[in-house]
Image 1 (cartoon, rainbow, N blue to C red):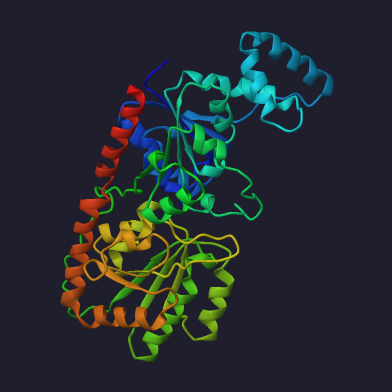
Image 2: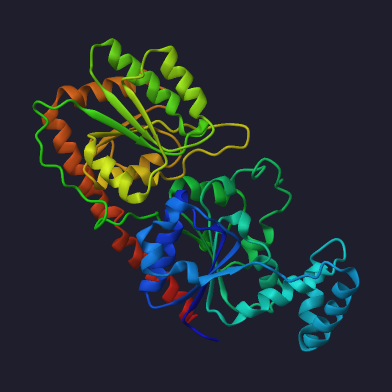
Length: 414
């Protein structure tokens, strides 16, 4: 077995909203591992392709598409299936075990087994998203598959029905039994996964980190004469709660505060947000600037003063924010955070030290905390400095890389 290969399995690549996956892959490369990225489809995300890490580490050259090469012609498909069976006769008992995991016979399963056989020389398979586990959980169960299996959950994959249609009918039973390690980014998400049946001894909490050499604090102003500018970063969806931020700005405006809120992100909620902005005469107070590259997000954070994170818990199959990468990026750039106590967000800053935490949907609280920072420029600067120090001590990518170094090396040595 080659002890220096890690296969990362992700649904699609690259994707701007999942820069933490790029960071995870780069961590493995920096630790000296050869990596391959296994994906169902390759995207043409222009903003993501501008990611300097993707270019620097030539990640697009490391992609393997999950293509089982199944012929469309029925007779050729059967003929090739027989050839594959003969080719893999020495592994027949494992193939039969693999087939027994399915309720109905299909030629596809042998094509699938043969495709994944190529990864048996890797030392570690690192799957991103629990719902992306298949078929590595089954391959591990058959005892044929030798690499160690790590699966990192991110949030929606711990809430059933997953994606609105996958039921909890023992969906993770094989994974929790045969995986070597399950990771989550906060205690909030870890508790949800443990409640689904994950053994406690297999759970490890490893936050998503931030590159503090890229996102850093360069604020030098004392805020004495400047207007305060607010910023929020996140896709425009209901769960991100941007409508609550608009309500807070409306209230600040009613109290004669000249505030501008910049919202970075794109999504299905844009029309609803635009309608609220127009209905409440907030055109001069709100800027919807769309999705931006990491470099531009950093520039915008430097241009603003307070980060607000109005994300909320949702029902109907939606999960709350499990960590909140945007908050630690903002803190790293010197911005204090005012956020709702949703999911794992509270773990990303220290209430009263690097920001303020409000109950979900508590517009009055968020208004008062923002008002406090706006009126007290000394406190604003102090909390901004605290925010940077907090991230440097707990969420710096260097710290997170060291955690992964210990995990990868430990699994390799077992």
